[in-house]
Amino acid sequence: MPWFDSHCHISEADPDHGTDRGSTIGPDAIDDARRAGVHGLVTVGTDAPNSRAAIAVARSHDGVWATVGLHPHDATNGVEEIIPLLGEEEVVAVGECGLDYHYDHSSRQAQREAFAAQVAMAHERGLALVIHTREAWDDTFSILGTEGAPERTVFHCFSGGPEEARRCLAIGAWLSFSGIVSFKSADDIRAAAALCPEDRLLVETDSPYLAPVPHRGKPNSPALVPLVGAAVAEARGVDAEVVEEASWWGAHAAFGLRPRHTL
Image 1 (cartoon, one colour):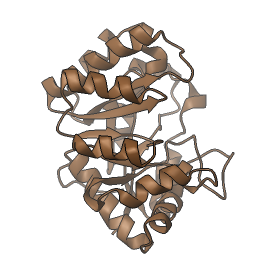
Image 2: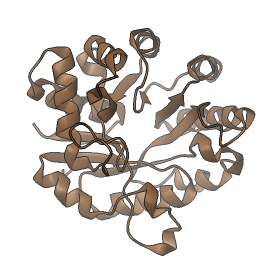
Image 3: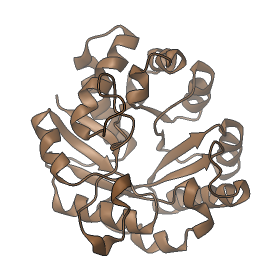
């Protein structure tokens, strides 16, 4: 059973996409991932240019899918530019979207409005929803309560503890664990990973960010997702192969993937 990276940021090295190359890695990372046993991944949009770039990568590579979304940092830009991209065949989710009260790069009101709009888009299109939430749990759940959590909702880079994990699981969401689970200070996240049911468990790299130990502080890539999975397995007291299989099928369920060629 291969590994699946449920969240990374890959774009073609094409200036026409208008993407910030510091926030993504190039498609050569897909070949590296294949050699590392990672045979499926979702590359994630954070605004209109990055979403177009994600679609282009998915269109050009088997075993790669894309999302379209507006990150809370860019919420003041409004969601209008991403709407036309949602109908592309390669798109399996809306997001990443949500609330980030740590940086507040966009006003909190703008973040809440953009998040609510994207929850509605996921419902309208029958797509999964990929959530970014940081220091904003109560407002995140409030908006999901008002709008209704989509049937397939993923909490990307899960950074809460057992209490937040139970709240996510209570609405039927998947928890996606990143390299943070391997950090020495991440006891709460490991506790959440330990209690997460196998069928609600995903692993991700969030490349090029959050490289797992022993690569912390260096650029991340999908090829390192087995290290994230190994850290999750250690927290759960199981073999890494158990997490590998659970996260592979979990990603297919969470994103509604039909059988397709892998990497």
